[in-house]
Every structure is written in C-alpha cells, then in structure tokens.
Length: 185
Image (cartoon, rainbow, N blue to C red):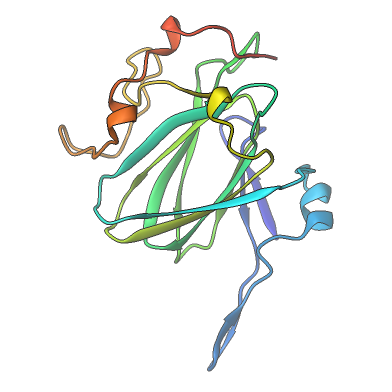
C-alpha cells in the first residue's frame, strides 16, 4: 500500500496494490491494521455510494460537526473525480487551505479526509461512481456545508464557468466567513 501525504499532511492519498491476471484483478482496498500503521486509525461505521450521470457534478463542500464528526475514506469505482479537502480547524496553520487529488477507477487511489475538514468533489467523467467509508453515521442535525466557490477559499475547481451541476441544497450554502467555529485545531 502506497501512502502519500498531500498539501495538508493529515489528508492522505492511499493507493492499495492491485493484482491482475487474465481473469481480472484482486485488491485489498481496506485493512484496519495496515491503515493504522499508516496513521489512519479510523473506525468506519457506514459506507456511502453515489452515482453522478454527468461530467461536472459537484458535491460539496460538506462536513458533520460534533457529536457526529466524520472522517472519510473516498474511492472511485467507475469514472474519475477531482476530490478536495478544506481545513476548517480554527487555529490550524493550514486553516482555509485545501488539499486535492484526482481519484479514478484507473489510478485506484483513495483519499483520507479526517474530521475537521470540508469535503467535496466534482466528476471528471460521466457515469462516475464513488464509494466512501465514514467514521460516524449520517446525522442531519450535525450536517454543515460551505458554498463550493467561496472566494476566500479559492479552491481551483477543474470546471469551466457555468459547468458545475449542483443540488438545490449546495447552491445556497454560506461562505465560510459566515459560519460558526465548528472545529478547533
């Protein structure tokens, strides 16, 4: 298993080995002991899967606050995404900064997004399926979000102007500066 720390060291790109032959392939995509050795000692409680039919579908930026803070291990089953994590831990030296990576069925990489970060992604190909493990179950009361194009965050989404396909909920999220303090470093 290859582990690479991204622009924010707590956010990691994990690429499990993939063994192929004429029949197809085999890969151990998650092993608690190996992930703990890499510094990801998360206890996952739920798996989520999404399908995005179009290129340019943008899901985010989302998080959950206490008592239901979620860490996420995200991977792509089909297609490709540009995945981003934004540090919103007040007092962190990387507060307001982001780390990002392309995840695809082809590159087989996963991204670890710990609690204290906003998470979002946009699809780079049509019919993209994403699977992610989370460390806390979905909790509507703990759900929070920040508008994807917050100018203070300046996330460089790989989308042309007007290309983002958003849910009604994601269209009306506030800017980070308008939000309460959700996490502290």
